[in-house]
Amino acid sequence: MSSNFAALYGEDVYADLIIECENRQFKVHKVVICTASSVIAKIFDPRNNMKESTSNVIKHEHFDAATLQRMIEFAYRGAYTVEPVKVLPRDTKDFSASRLRLLVAHAYAYAIADYYEFVAMKVTAEDSLLDTMPYGWDASEPARLLELIVTIAQITAQGDKKGIRHETVDFTVHMLRHLKDDATFFSALVNSEEPAVQGLAKEIFQWSASRFQSCHDDKAYWCKREKQARQNNMKLREELKSNGLQHIKNMNDLRAQKDKEMADAVTGLSAVFTKQIAEVERVEAESDARANEDANKLRQLAEKHKYAVEAMREARHPTRGNTQSMFSIVDYLRHQD
Figure (spheres, one colour):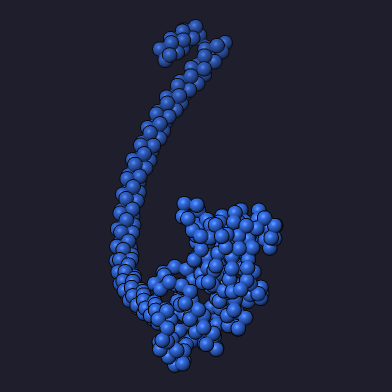
């Protein structure tokens, strides 16, 4: 919405509201300011019958004119301007006067946005302040941190656990390790006569004690966890050792069992092979005996046939044989067959 009003920023045309602050008059448009701030919108709600709704003039006395102008600028443009615009990184050691001015300006922008319930500006101001905090600060010139603490104490509500007050408390606690030997800083912080500063100092020391206790609890917790981890590691090593020995025993038993099974299998196969070899040899021997017997019969038969042939030759001879001899041979051969 604010981007639609950017062209109207600084223009008096159609301006229908004046906000007075420090002898300055800011001419603005109700539609823009009331859209941004629910507090100002209630002022001009006819049901509330407030004098500003008829006079169209708001007298602002809570913040300075520069801070008010930043709020008006944000209502129109969605951003506000703070000089100088150059910001060093958060991890820088610098806590110069210009950085302090930036921090204070963002703090006041946050406070006025909170006062007028200007949510978008409040978020932007908080982010800008956090981006400007020098978390790498080496604690030189601690008076600037003290000035920031005083400013935050004056413009924020005591006990606020969110927003820039808590961020300032957290930043200060973060820096106490560098300031622990600075008696002047602690004296100014503790002995301040301003109630707002005393309240913020109390919050700083309470948060520091809480952080210290938290660190102590964390250390105790992790020491306990470390001890438990060592015990678990020792127990695990013992279990691994025991399991390793048992595994070796199981492997040896399995190896012995497999060796026995192999030996039994070899013995069984040897017996089978021996029996088969003996059977083969028996069959071969019987075959050889039958073959020899058949060979002898064949030899005998051949001898007989040879004899018969010789006899036939004798019988056929004109001078040696006769018919009776031939018949005797034939009869002999018939009986042999």
